[in-house]
Structures are given as structure tokens and as C-alpha cells.
Image (tube, rainbow, N blue to C red; front, side, top):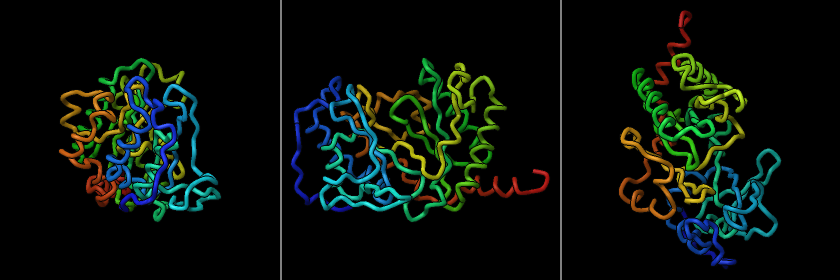
Length: 296
């Protein structure tokens, strides 16, 4: 990670980006600087999609993938599938995006150098409207218990909004097609075993009060909220990796915000790093082999 050396002229530093949390643009950029070592781990080798809120979280927003004409020379970019994507690979580029009121950072499931192989299987647990987060936690723990029973190690993080995401390292050893088959296998398994908890119904109106097990989001060209990215919520939540023991004790997305995340990160470090740094999970390797057997 490069040190910040390029000058940054902060525009409207007193503008409230998170009014309810009392966070101005100056505060926000300062907090991004603190978060930089964690965020850059996941953005530095990936084309990024950002969501900007020029007038703060209560105002209008817009998505951005391509580098704008007014971007300074120190902003990295790369042409991918006809789009000249921004690459946030330095502290100064992250802070520049903060000055542009980028409040959310979404990343693809693979780095640029591995376009056909995702880092991990990802189960995106999306609650129904009005469904309490405690039920999302209970569902995640059920998934973890089942995965442990077949020797699969998984990692969890809050989305920072309303859901949880569970990841299983693949070490970029499987193609997107193969990973999608495994995600579908697990989605069907959990919805069949726990039909009163999970659904894979894509139409929101048909989900009822069931938890949506989103196995489709993990795909080439799609994105997921970056670990340690802020979210455009009133309480300035952070998408935060959490220990399973913490989920067992109970937590909520608002427990992790721009105001209080740094002491936790200084104490616990990056809990999510094994997701992109580990090889293919042994349990998944064994499952793949068993599914290949004629009578599996």
C-alpha cells in the first residue's frame, strides 16, 4: 500500500454526509484514512463500483464505475469489458473518492488477474421486509452448523445494511460455473431442509417472511459490498467481518459504525483475510469429489 503523497483539496469539508451521526465530509475522509489499510486489501486489485451521495445519505445518489474526465493523474484505471474502471489502489485514491462523497465501495468476486475464478462461495442472506436481524443471525448459525458437520470452514460479515454474508474460501481454484453449481447445491439443501426459514424465490412479493438465500449474486461482473466499506445508513454502519462466537452472543449492524470501528480493528485485525488468502477449503474439496461420484 502506497503512502498518501498527492495533495487533496477537500471541497465543502463541513457538509454533513451522515447528518444523524454528525459526520461531516472532513470527518468522513479522516475516517477513510484510518480504514485505508483494511479497505485497500480488497480494492487494490479489483475494478470498483462506488455509490456517491453528494448531498449526504438523505439526498440523491449515483453509481460510478468509469473514471471521470476530471480525475487526477494519480487515480489508477483499467479498461475492462469496454469500461474504463477506477482502481482504488492507494490511500490518495481512496481519499479522493471520499471527497467525491463515495459512501459505498462495491467489489467484484474476483481480482482483475483472475477473471474466471472467484475468491469464495458467498451466501448472501437477505431478510424480508420487517424481519428482525436476530432471525438473520439464527439462520446464519444454522448454515454454519451444517457446514461444520461436513468439514467446511466459513466466515461471516455484516452487509452493513440489513443482511449477513457467509463466505467459504475457494482459493480461486474453481470456475464461476462450478462455484455457481455449488452455491445452487447449498441453496437447495438449506431451503429443502429448512423450508420455514429459507427461500430462493427471486420475486420479493413471493418470499413472504422467509429469508432470501441469494446464491445468484456471486457471479462474474456482479459485486458485493467491500469488507470495511461504509454504508449509506443513518448510523454510518460498516460492513464488518464478525466471529461466529459474536453472532452466537447476538449483535446488530449498528454495532459497527464509522464512529467506533477502529478500536475493534486495532484489537482484532482483519478477520476476513482468510477468505481471499486461503486455498480451496478442504471440506469443499471433499464435497466436490463426492458429488462427482456416480451415485452421489
